[in-house]
Each structure stands twice: as structure tokens, then as C-alpha cells.
Length: 227
Ligand SMILES: C[S@@+](CC[C@H](N)C(=O)[O-])C[C@H]1O[C@@H](n2cnc3c(N)ncnc32)[C@H](O)[C@@H]1O
Image (cartoon, rainbow, N blue to C red; front, side, top):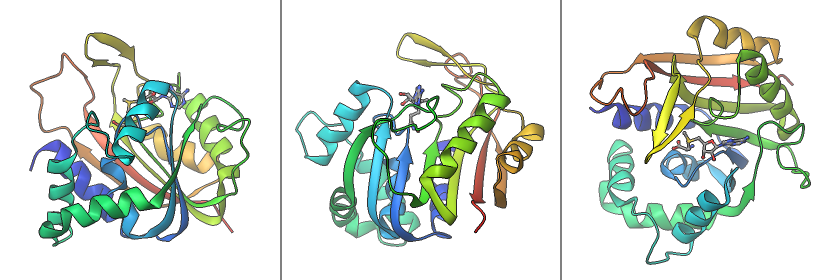
């Protein structure tokens, strides 16, 4: 299994442990891969990103625009993980029907959806995002604290991201990355006031493209806001 396939498997496992009315997806970029299992267990999904061009891509996929990114191979793979490969078109339709909004978000704002005030959701999911805006573990912890107003008491926070990265490229654009260290990560969740349900760490297996992104591993954390 490739690292990407393994991430999809971990996301499917994490999302298999939660369900509810509303899921907030934070910092989706132009992508939907992380919502393919979630759409089976949540009634409504609010997705979001900081950049307008990413939100535009998301909206293109939602309205089946001919210029939308093609996620077919990823949808087929997730259906296969779920034991239902032949139903990949239904899965895409289900996800489209569950996504109710595509909002702008900014992790560094006290209310990341300002000026919109969202009802607290059953779950907040964020993948490969917080290392972009956060400078260090202190600002990461601060974002986790601000997320608490977006999550109901007893609700879930699911975070998938990378460990020990310092940079990544998108095309020829260089972005710096917060260097998330395993040793300080769980403490940041606890300091922000969450209970950790599950923490999984996995090494990076494919080292061939270290020039594009130098992360060394992945983390998958399922935490809960206390009741
Ligand atoms: C490495 S990309 C990951 C995108 C996507 N979640 C994925 O898994 O491929 C980092 C994302 O963080 C977003 N981002 C950058 N600054 C942000 C901020 N202040 N608040 C929220 N998201 C931000 C970017 O727009 C981008 O979509």
C-alpha cells in the first residue's frame, strides 16, 4: 500500500468511530478524499478553505463542472476499502448531497469562520492543514482551543497530518511548514482541553520525493471535547 492509500485507510478507520448530524471540514484545500468515508456517517458537511481558488475547485467538483478535478480513482479506492467498489458513483453522489456549504476559514482567527458564527458541530475534521498557518506548537495549541467553540460538548476532533516537516511545494511555490514533533503533539491537545481517544503514528515509507516535501511521518489523532 502507498502512503496515500494508507492515509485513506486510517481516515476511514477514524471516521468509522464517529457519527452525527454535522461535520465541519477545516482547510480542505481543493480536495474531497478525506470526506469519502465521513459522508456515510454524517448528515451534513460544511467544508472550507482559506484560499478562494481552492474553494472554487471544491465548488466545481460539487456541481460536476467539466473542469473539476477528477477524484474517480480515489473514490474507487475508498469504496474498495469499504467493501463496495462497484458503488463508487453512488458514493460521489452521496458526498455531493451531504456537502451543504463551502466556507472561507482562517485558522488564526479567534472565530475561524468570522463573520459567520456556526452552530457547534458533532465533529471537526482537518487534514494536512494546520502546519501551514501555525508557526509553532503554541499557535497550534491556540487553534485547537479556538476549535472548541465549533464543537459540541462530547463532540469529536479528528486531525490527520504530518510529522517533522519543514517545507512543502505546490507546483513551483515553496511553503514553510510548522515542524510538528510527536513528543509535544498530544500535550498540545491536552493543554487545549481535549481528551485523546486515539493517537496513531506511522512512518513515511516513500522517501523518493523529499525535495517536494520533507515530512518524516504521519499522525492521526481522534480527540473529544469533554462534556
Ligand atoms: C498542504 S494544504 C492541504 C490541503 C488539503 N487539506 C489536503 O489534505 O490536501 C494546506 C492548506 O492549508 C490552507 N491554509 C493556509 N493558511 C490557512 C489558514 N490561515 N487557515 C486555514 N487554512 C489555511 C491552505 O489554503 C491549504 O489548502
